[in-house]
Length: 309
Image 1 (cartoon, rainbow, N blue to C red):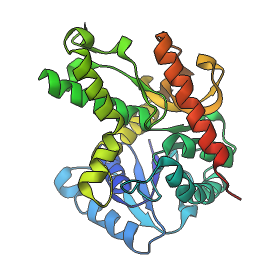
Image 2: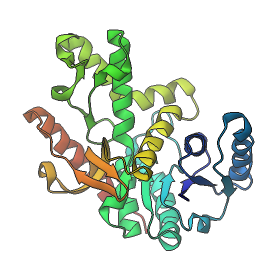
Image 3: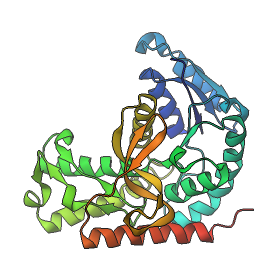
């Protein structure tokens, strides 16, 4: 079946997202960026790897956002990266104008697409994209929960010296400092992690997860993470195009679930061909539920403070 995914932003995250989509044979890709020559050059480079990697999907680069036309999915990675010491609120002000402008173009040329937001601050930008596009809520979502959960699983597996595939957990809430690791649903090989790791050490791992992106930013000095973010975005693309009904923590629009409404926040959802097909309300401890509501409140306040004409 002929499928098309447009990737907005030809930086490291966008380029790797495009590369993984064609290598997995998920769809043809259009890579878009405002910098002349950048998406074209990176698309040609990826295309020339096809004889070695063995994929047949097509990839092209463009500076014309109208070429999102006929896209099944648009993955939005464009924007300024988070610099050392920069708050997510400051980043929202820088990236909000970019998101609004480009999403207006997407809505005109690809009115039936699904939007996956990767640009930070993720939950705020996802809500802005939804408001700007006018799309149904099930067709606009953010990637953060998958990335945060992957980081947490990786750290736990490293601590326990087990396969990351044996670690099951979920992180809800905002993709940021107020994320909520769900300890009541965290196991390794079916064993509650709280029985395997002491509270003090587990709290330290949770804190490292909350600062996972900042840790990489501080080490790189310039730029931010791109391997795990692109993998997380592609997992969502694969679930939607394959109609696989996978359950992921995704930034979704809530209408009363968990006692929260009118905000995008990370919760467990089922992804399929139509986008978010179901939002699950899982059992949370009182503390976890309070944390989720606190996280949603922080996202709402940041969005309200975002002044975009």
